[in-house]
Length: 405
Ligand SMILES: Cc1ncc(COP(=O)(O)O)c(C=O)c1O
Image (cartoon, rainbow, N blue to C red; front, top):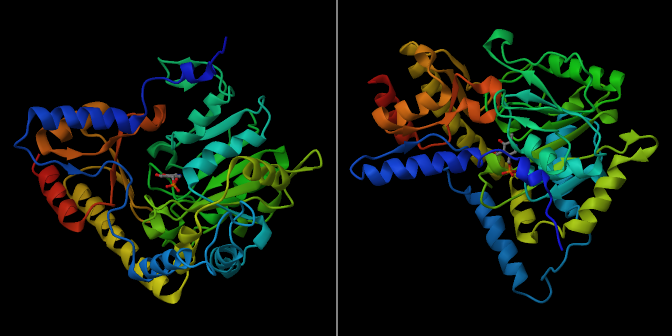
């Protein structure tokens, strides 16, 4: 008789956004006359930029001609034209040492950040910043690496939590116990804050000194405007021997529905003489048949002069929303964070409300949907996330409602 992977049974409740969706749908059904404004989920709203759309159309047409038709790609790593564009624009232009054959094109930072743990031993102990993008922990739970869940503390017995709260200015401190694998995400989802290049360098030094590995999620890199923030972990000295970086096209190019990302595994990264690059290549070649050619062609256009200009406008559009949210909330007395190098605003809930109490309050009194901070981890309790990914008009309207509460 077959058995199931029992680790799945350990996962508590349903995924944060399905809980929110259920609550919102129940409220909408009970109150059909109310119009809700959603500033909850981190999905983009601006359409695909024209230069990218043109590349898409061109690639679709190529698929209709025998001479230019493409079937399986030569390997699962992605076409060289895209990997070269990524190398030039995301790494060489930043003075970071990365090579074209270290870049693995994939279909999402979610899948890569969830799948990468497969190449590590079951006994590795992970550390996560808290609050955190839930995928890092959940994927390790599924692999049996996190121990048991304590509903009271909302913590896993075998995970090292690095609290990021206003008390430490959302900068994680080094833990007492040395982790094997450390997940870092900057600019951060959900707090919208980031750390300086100097602070990131300290984490790289810590990892190298202690034989730990950093999995660095740079999904929001395009939103960085502060000069002292690293655009890639490979700007830090020594990162090639301790860090894997995961990047996404979702938030910089509106590819949340298109699906494209890449992961860098440097060849200098080894464990007992075994190359992690080789392991990841083996994993991808076995389980993944590559990202669609037409999507990779669209991805290439992200790096064209027109593509870059059009996407800079989109990012400016979202960051205008971020500034508006930040300043409007601050003007009525909220404590607000983030929103400068990231499209997320993280706020302290007023009057010591819990995150879910504030969620209900905002939904019922303001008809605005946000995300409870506690859904991202125990240190998120008492905080709340709003996203700048809505339309400008909706953002203005939502803030008028919040200010009027
Ligand atoms: C930190 C972080 N990493 C990864 C992702 C997923 O990115 P993708 O759309 O490339 O799967 C998200 C999406 O919200 C995210 O916030």
